[in-house]
Image (tube, rainbow, N blue to C red; front, side):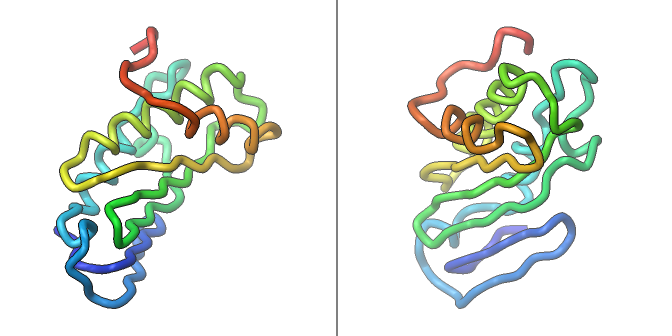
Amino acid sequence: MTVRRDHVTARRDRVVAGPRGDGPSALVDLEAVRAAAGSVPDPEIRRTLTELDLLDEIELGSDGDVMVRYHLTSPLCPSPFAIDIGREVRRRVEAVPGVRACRVDIHDHFTAAEISQQVNDGVVDAPPAWL
């Protein structure tokens, strides 16, 4: 499905959309973003975020920015794995045509704020070594 909205939020199987627009998000395919984010595997379980039902929300902004919110299999997931997963989500979503930038927000982890900051700071140009 190609989304033609100024603002779209997808919560698992529900989409809430704002007013129509002609900005960059009009060209961003929500399903492509969901597929890209959901294709990232958990490094220990070797199943994808989609298979594990860990994607919580995808939000498309009017300027081509995307917000992906997800949680991990455990609130005590080792921080290096959590950071790698988040960065890989960001890298894959930013490769989707029409996406200008992706912010990844993790929750339900005991160091969620610190992990989110490390995931979203700087450029992500290579997949993690465990992929």
